[in-house]
Image 1 (spheres, one colour):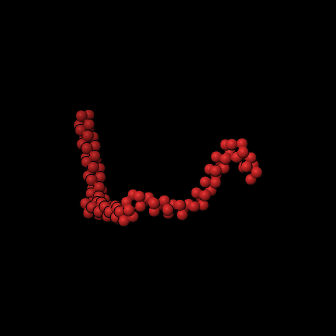
Image 2: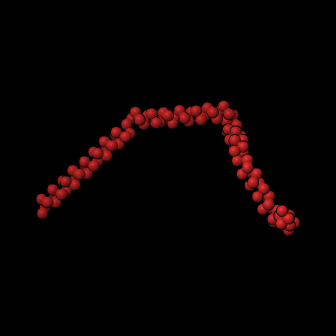
Image 3: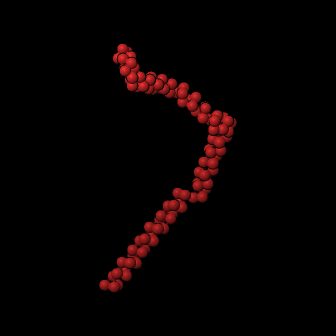
Length: 104
């Protein structure tokens, strides 16, 4: 019985070693240094480009103003409807406001 336990342990260890070796080979093939360096360098280039554009637009303030301008133009209709709804909601708080809403 001891002999069978030793054989089982050895085969378990051998199987585990094979799985570990296969995993290491897979990682080695997928994540070679050249690929990782390429990804990291591409990411760094993209961040540098975004930083340059932000700097050319005047930093945070200029970039924020540009994005706000673009957003306002893109969502002008939705912003107008939202402002009207807000106005109606605030008007409904008072009796005279409710009367005006009913008249509409």
